Length: 213
Image (cartoon, rainbow, N blue to C red; front, side, top):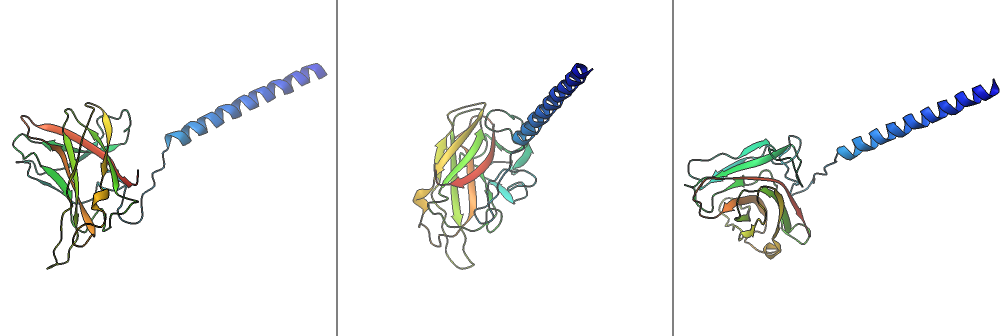
C-alpha cells in the first residue's frame, strides 16, 4: 500500500511540474509577442508609427506636386513580413503625372512638435517598402511667427537598395544642427519617390524615428 501511495505522489508531482512548465512557456511566449513601444513626451514626437494609439495617423498631412492625387493613406500593413510586422503603414501613390519631387508634409506647428536638431536627434530612420529603386528625400522646415523669416533645411536623399521588402533607410541630418533663421523645426517633409516616373509608383513607409546612430 505504501509503495502504491508513493507512486501516486510521484505521479502527481510529475504532472504538477509539467503543468507549471507549460504555463511558464505560454506566459513567456505571450510576453515576447507584446512589444512595448516607448513614445517620446517631448518634441520631436516619435516613433511615428501611424498606429491608432501612436503618432502620425491623426496628424494633418498634405500631399503636394502629385498631379490629381492629394491624399495620403493610412492603411493596414499589406506586407507584415521581415522587419515590419506592424498593423498600419502609410501608402503614397506617386503618379506619373506628378513631379519627381512630389511628396507629403506635416502641418506647421502640429504633429511632430517644435524642436532643434542636435547630436541626440539628427539621425532619422524610416522603414520603406518600394517596388523600384529611387531616392527617398527628407527635409524639415522651421517655425516662424508672422512677419518673421524662416527657412527650410536642405533635403537629404537616400535610395533604397531592396525592392518588394521592407528596408530601413537612414538619413543624416547633422548638417542641419545650428542652421537656419530660427533653428526651430516644426514641419517634416517627405519625398517618397524622388524620380521622374514613367508609371505610377506605390510606396509604403512607416516607423519614423530620431536618434544619434
